[in-house]
Image (cartoon, rainbow, N blue to C red; front, side, top):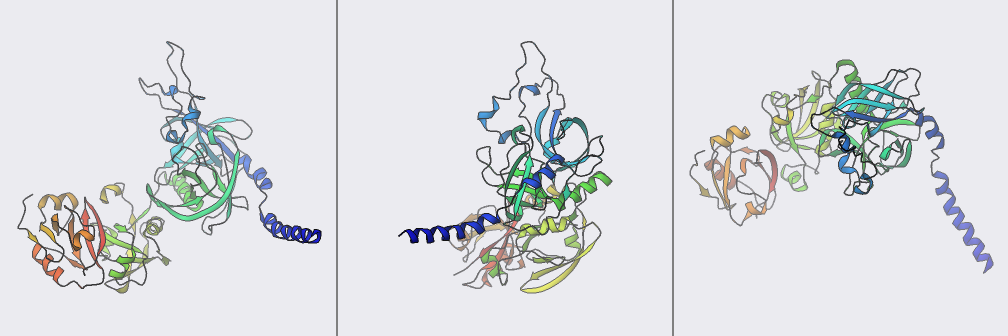
Length: 465
């Protein structure tokens, strides 16, 4: 019995030792890198009649501050005293050159009247905002100092899920706090920004970490901690960092030209579901489906059409539709790139000259009734497209759904006021043509139906039985 216990103990040690030996030791990394990490606070611009000192949580991270902490930091003025703007610790940053250039987040310094940087040696210096880009959430600061410790810049290109990473920052004002974890995913698209392929990690990030560096095991910066997903105001295991390759490109443009220029293709895209892939004759659900080609865009000039599926851009595979915008954005305006598409089940290659993303790109993304009829195959009541919708949504043609009865149309998810512009690759010009197009549809396999819903174009799969 005793010998059995000894054998089991040895086996447990053999199982435990290799796993324990693989855990990284971050001590030397922190000693080397921490001196280049800084705390950033701001003094807000004075507003007439505004008592900004009453609430130091007016900043961009305010909604992420747990309620239980807020009363520790509130500053109430004496009776009759006029409140004055006070510095607010909003985030972190890191020195990228010995002559005082610093990277942080745009939202950390947004709207600041004065930006203060506290170094690791406790010096506090006022910083000049060299440039700030809201779309990438990157800002470049400059302080008047020399001989500063600075970080080593790595590359986020080869970063893979499962790698160890480490963050240093000032969560809740606690300077040089160190947290570690692994990369959960790369090239993650978030709803509020399609031009940044975020690095997702499980590193503990909280308000105050914003703008701080994310290191790999070589002690190189691979990202800038930017956002967290939270329902409580604190860390929940989902943190997002801006890839350092993207951030450094933005920083260089801000330093040299004062603004950031991005490539623009001029299409509205959507994901390719399994049913849509089958309806378009694709081998698998992958790529970016073009739901709309914007007028006057590079895509229109190069011959792209609604219903094209982009599966490779400039030699890089497009697996998800969210993969496309960052790839387009990195191309310098004026460059020509090859784009591989599937059109009507056939593979084609188009060459397009990328242009600069317009300032009003968000806007770009975006009454009489004629005879009506009931479509026997879809059970829809449709009418001719009115002039008001054509002008409002920039439509050339289509039919408007007036009513949806139980049937294939309802099963496909069509609703009243949807505008049907294309059926199985055929552009719809009139109610009569729409009915004729329906008569030609096959059964027992999905076909693509392009609609415009509240101004937003999309494809949906339609299957008749």
